[in-house]
Length: 282
Image (cartoon, rainbow, N blue to C red; front, side, top):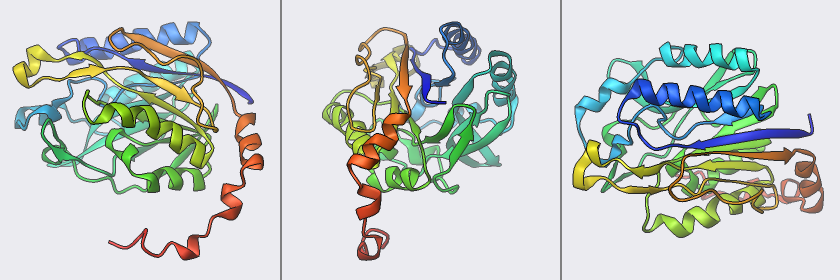
């Protein structure tokens, strides 16, 4: 498959888990009607971004993989013949929780999962209260549309994982995020394009919209959307999404561009892993 129609969502918190799930089911159906073959939802898609505060009540959002929400979207993926990247709050054992994305193939098969590695602990991003660091490596999944990887939110600040995904032969990497104005604005503009160019694959980057004020009061932040796709040379594919409107951002990706970019810039040939001694030191 050369041309892949891919999509990401940016959606405002509805205030309720079930309505968030139903909204994303609707958006997936709309995307399928538009010919979309693979879709990625935003970080922790069925809940608020609870890293704003530290409160044990949000542990109630955990689910197993497989579990009820994953199985629900497995059935939808099979119905729509669509690959789905599904970011959820995962429980592995009692009290062992991860920020995870399940990858579901177009026949409904659960191919596996990625667990977010890099966990921030900053004001309004108190994620160490909620998540253990990922421990499943940087898998790339052979899907009906090609080789798909995942890197979640704060992960994007760490170039090592982007390269691992490239070395694992990714063609398209989804980066579901929840990021707010401030220090992140400029990084949002440059990090994913730079990573796409350095590693020569497509990246789908999506962010939430809205302010979850009813959930968090004055602690709530204004998520700024601006979801986008970039190609293996670091160029935007189409326009960047709005800052405040719910959207399914849909783009046609020509996977032949990956080979062309890698032939023009032989980064994988010219790497010198034997010289990178400090990179993997603790």
